[in-house]
Image 1 (cartoon, rainbow, N blue to C red):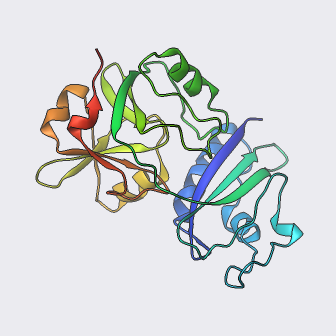
Image 2 (cartoon, rainbow, N blue to C red):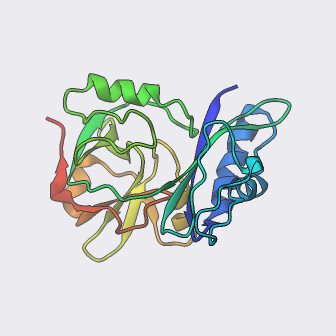
Length: 241
């Protein structure tokens, strides 16, 4: 079976918004006709470390091959879980708990990707990486998902001129009056996007690259990034030539 990835925000040792991650994990399993990973139990086990004790190591039960345990009381952290779905039940293959630092992004470069599919959060992102390698205007992909790409430029993926996603985040466009819109058909429907739509903070719309002048700024959001954490003026978007 395919390997999948889930990235969960951890603050003060507590995993945030697990219900939205569970909804995505369950939908992924249902689409493949296999049992779903139960995140609440899995995450509780992976975070079995004394986060207030000042340096105690995680017990062996909290480690998986390649896993790394770190203290969870040092600001925003990223829990990265790679898992495999099987007919006999899911299996966690790797986990990492890492400090999270917001990247400085100054420019979004438009890249057409009409045939790109990423309906589920696959651990294998080779198709996306290949697209970016083959596009001379696109910034290069990171060596692995946990590493920030070099530079201060991020691709903005288009489907026949319609805004989709960035490489690692959903898009939010802010109108001058404050209303927030997000593309109706993202490459991947992220958990932060789902949560903000449910709360009525975001609204969906088919957004074409030609619509950008009607907006004030572009925000990148994901499980680790809130609205405003990574926000650029629309003038920072380099449109297709």
